[in-house]
Image (cartoon, rainbow, N blue to C red; front, side, top):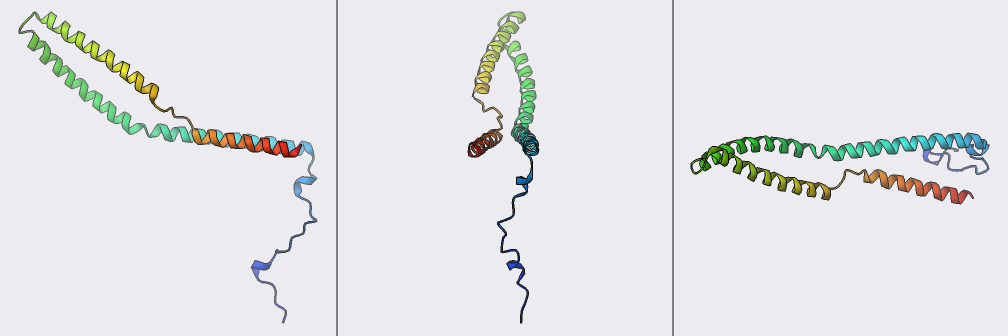
Length: 151
C-alpha cells in the first residue's frame, strides 16, 4: 500500500539549483531596496529612541508631582515661620530690622539650596536612549561587515 508522506515530511527535499530571487534583480533595483530598507531602519531606530526617552521621562512624573505638592506646603510653612520669627524679633528691636534679618537668613538658605540642586542635576543621569544607541551601533557594525564580505 502506497501512502502519501506525512505533512512533516513534505518539502524536505530542497532544490539547490534554484537561484535566489535577488540574483535576477539589477543593481539599481537592489540599491533602491537598500535605500528603502535603510530609511525604514532609521525610522524604527528613531521611534525606539523616542519611546525609550519618553519611558524614562515618564518615570520622573510621580517625583515631580510629589515634589510640587511638598513645595506648596513648604511655602505655607515658611510664611507662617516668617511671621513668627519677625514677631519674636520685634520684641527686642524695630519691626523693620527684624524683617530684614529674617529676609537675609532666608536668602542665604536659598543660595545654598540652589547650589546643592545644581550639583545634584550635574550628577543626575541624562535620559539617553541607551538601547537605541546600542542597536544603532550593532546595525552599523553589521552593515560594515556586509560591505567587507561583499568586496
